[in-house]
Length: 152
Image (cartoon, rainbow, N blue to C red; front, side, top):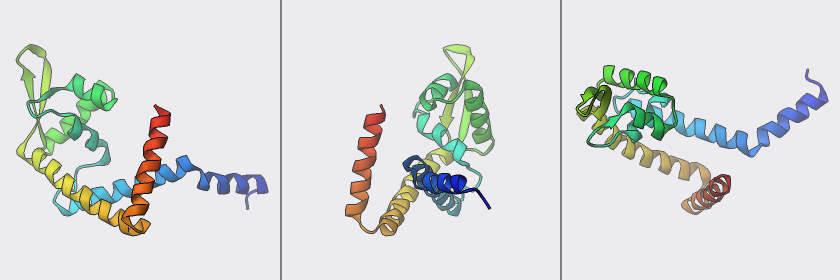
């Protein structure tokens, strides 16, 4: 049994907005990955997702991907190599700088992105149903935008 102070702390923490936002993000992310696994992308993990959104159509240097994702160059390099091994990305030498590498989406990577858009739509519909209706979700979105705007 915890002391009354610890119990009070635990209750307060469970109602903390930051805690609730983190838990909501965890639930949404887990559901998104499950939807993507249903589409044949079961080996893509949450850690990989930022890389997909940081790669341009014509290809992007790893250092640029790192900057866009705010992930260290070394960590992005590891993620890129994982996604390359899974067939989502390719790495080629940068023609303007032999020391650098350019990351490009493969057909499978482009397909992942397209299927991700559809999975996100399904997720939004499920969230709307869980929250109650579209109007309630719109209020939540507006509140979150204000919150993020204040944090900038």
